Length: 224
Image (cartoon, one colour):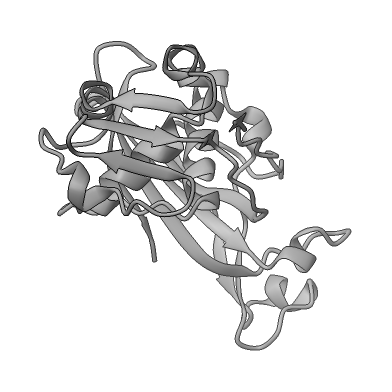
């Protein structure tokens, strides 16, 4: 029985930051893009300076980066599989380490349906979940519909690497939302000295901040 928490390296770069702003995106026809050696069809997107972020802003960015690393997708018409995938990931983060202790038995973790629903309903924009449709019952995990519990021998175990930067970070105090657009970069170029910011794609996450500044719902998490 194992519990593994995902660790994410935050890569720091240098562009000015404001509460609701974005990075500069250039194609290789611009003089600056050509100077740094981009190919003729390459998009260059300069990430924001994460060193200037507050601890709260870094918290939300790191959470969004974790979603990207595990390939999490949350659409407006959220599926049962998306709900189950979100649940499996979010309980592997430190915010649920105390609950993990409650679920631990001698040789596995036993999670009652009421806990699953509480977590999903707290963090996703839904108030229903069909565990028989969401959990695929393969590998080390299984949902027992008779006992209404989810059994697994491992929580966490996620891994992966990506070169990620923040392209947009916007807080809407009226709507209590935070919208983050991440850029996924070509790995080797990103770690060049000096770095070359070749954008492969984007990933957008929208959080709704609820009762206190750490409680949230994920309204959207989608790649381009």
